[in-house]
Length: 400
Image (cartoon, rainbow, N blue to C red; front, side, top):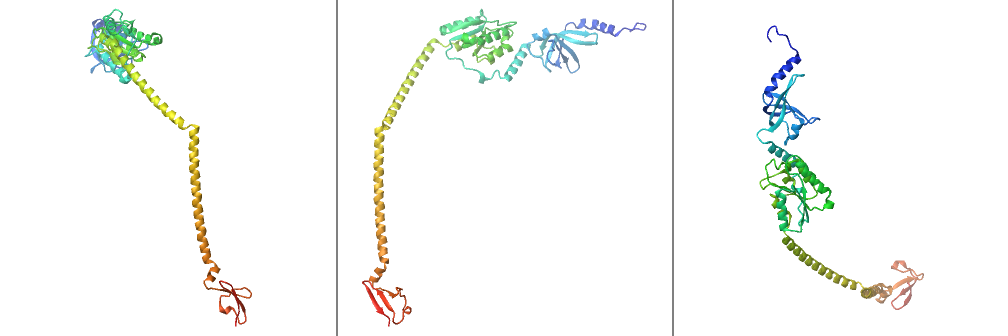
């Protein structure tokens, strides 16, 4: 300020800075690293910072711009912000207001694809264990696609050539541009909700080839969630063989092209006839084997039943009674013989020990007149009368 100029207010200074600063930076591209990112505010706007090694600036991303982003912002992500400088005069602050955000070094769609892939893979949406086999002979197939595209024509032509008995139902959806992902997801959820009435065996989500931008609807989360939640097995056939989408990873089966999807899902009628004939022959063999096995079992049961009849039972009991009777008689005879032999032995021993038998061998028993047995000569005196028992009689004597 030159000497003599009048001082100005803070508000005037801020207004002058705003007038001088904003026009030169009405359209500027700035490269830096996202910092202090906490997601969208309740209003949907994003307030964070853009920084590098030397400085930091406040960054504002309005809701409309933020919702157009295909990738996710996060701290540390290097981006190029195209926008303008906005001075908030009341606080003397300036910010960079983004009109577009692009990841540095890689395309926004490639980064969005990588982020979506890693996030859904971590949640288990690509787990091979949850993928279901397709039905061998589907009768009703849902084609979730544009009703006017080349993809639906290719699938219908291939399916009709292979098997005219299979029923095809086109579920029309938007496959490109704004709202395409929501259209595909809504169709998938709708046929699942009504499938008890509709009776779909398989759903083919398909469209023809195109750029990454053209196919982007099949990389969005609503489509991935709808495929994952589907009770109907889902085949993804998006673009050409070189194209890969998130839908391919979530689906139960990925087909490289729409035509290939029809070939994988729709069995040839001739092959079905052969399989039916093979199944018929297998069934006949199984039935024949079952009948033979049951016949043998019935014969065995009949023989067993006869063996368990009352007459046979009586015969077996009679035989058992005869056997027991013979055994009892033999046991009694044996016991009698043993008893007789023992009695004879005891009688012989008793006879040998009898006093009479001893007397027969020349011995005698001498008693006094009072009947006392005399065992020694000192037991008698002269004049005592003695009685001696011999083997054949008795002798009376007087001791002298």
